[in-house]
Image: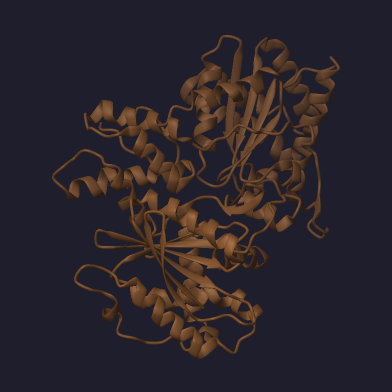
Length: 527
């Protein structure tokens, strides 16, 4: 059976092309060998389940280890009704997958589950079993988020904590390591003690060490998957360059890396005669995944997390749509939630969207809401014949910027600086959207610095146009911005670039300027 790039569920080496994560597995095995308890908390589809499967295989190949792996996915509420339900059910959950690898041990656990009726008996049973086994026993629990909001699960963690502490004092036998996997860090998860109780933070898992292993893929690791694909298919490619471009768009988010490769292999290559991969294929795959009409459960979850949390939505809106800088501080509960769901990461001490695909999806989602809102309808975004901005050779970006300048001068010259700083960039994005829609593709990329700038990259036919949106902060910052734009244009091998400069001073001047900077020709418009 021909292998493929996987974008659903567990990755399996004989069915899917996979990144070589042996270095990451070695780091986790070191934690296990040290007897540590920890939580692998990462966003959805970040490779947690695949990592557990690789750990499970590696441990059970060793003579001195025995690993059990269970999941709380689809368990339902009955298991957590009380300890009389939970304790025997836990042993049955362990027994279930053993039916396929060790039927005798599976039958033993099933039979023993009938003798365990509460946490005291479960604790004693674990001690006896591990003492008799004479192996280092590791327990892995996946999808702990499904059950971590109830008292019974807290009691279970508390029991494991007590046994861990007594083991370290030489007074008990228990698991060598316990690994919990889920989106949330169980050490800081908000939990309800009673149905009628106020939510509060509890730490039944404060024995756990910080899990710092980076599960994202760097460019060198992505190369290993591409080499695997090359070896099987015989297709030629510049694997390091393609891996760098894949990382550029995904920041190593495992699902997104595989998804872009899947687009190239199954959609882009069949559409052309040349079957070899080229770097431009990654750009094309990005445009496919970033389409507003394209969605997956991951993107649905991204939108849901934003829509269900108004504070989170407003904060991300300011970062993505208005380029507002914000110090990355995880003790801030809103920033923590954004980081937990994989939306924001730290970049040079500032909050940044995790990857360029998320940036584009969030931008499109939020802009769509703005465009259909009643408040936006009152802003008289002009209805114009968009064909006037397109020529036989490409897109007339100077005309777009000039028309936008006229629009701002006519409709918003009377607005105060606070309004313009808050809404100005959003107005341009809303102005640009109907021009490009259906003809080209725009990609907004943040480059937030002291001068608060961002880039809009427009692709039309085979051409790219880079428009930098920048807040005027004086001549010195302006020169630094020109240098940054020049370097960014070099990434696309472009000699022409565009500046839309927001001047929020009281005596600003609406002007246009053709700037020769180094080997670049830059057209600038002030609004």
